[in-house]
Amino acid sequence: EVQLVESGGDLVQPGGSLRLSCAASGFTFDDYAMHWVRQIPGKGLEWVSGVSWNGGTVDYADSVKGRFTISRDNAKNSLYLQMNSLRTEDMALYYCAKSTRGVIDGYFDFWGQGYLVSVS
Amino acid sequence: DIVMTQSPEYLAVSLGERAAINCKSSQSVLYSSNNENYLAWYQQKPGQSPKLLIYWASTRESGVPDRFSGSGSGTDFTLTISSLQAEDVAVYYCQQYYTVPLTFGGGTKVEIK
Image (cartoon, rainbow over all chains, first blue to last red; front, side):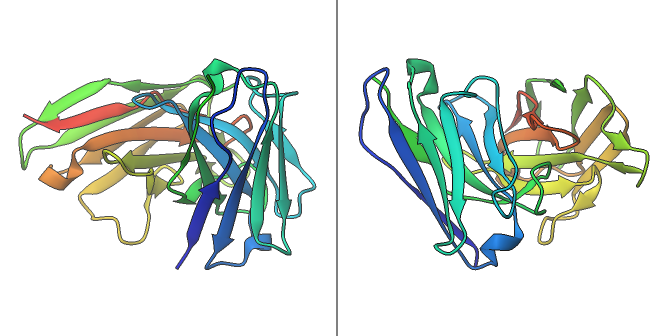
């Protein structure tokens, strides 16, 4: 059974930093690209960032480019999102999502339960 | 960036009736080399994570009831629920994966009339 479990830090002030983690299990992690998608409660979905199967290709939404860094550790079956210079508009539920392909441009067949990032 | 526009934003349908949600992309998401439309649909029930329903515009994900179907090509797509059930109350999103940045439609909230 595929499982994606997000975790992270506590409330952070504007300008601060936070690192999200996603622990994956139930599939061959290094076969697939992985992504972060966020959702302000009550609002729509916004793709944040993606990383290819081997970490060789990464990309970001313009809204986070230069502030967020995605990475993965295939040995630990884990995905990360380092979030710096946080703004109040970054406050959202952050989902870890598995792609169906090894490259970034794909759709998502499994999602985590999400981790709420609070910036205040 | 490819902008995805869904309509309507809100849809109220009687149980057993048909619901249709539209999704329009600002540029074609049809790849000529493989004749595939890079378009997916998701369902998000209250308090839950999104769930994949449809990919390649019309291929149903395993386990998804056959009352859900996807159609369209190029820039215009439709998700149809042929006979609405109570458990279909949710917000539905389309997503293009033709190119990064990956983009979603704004969502359509489906409720029972």
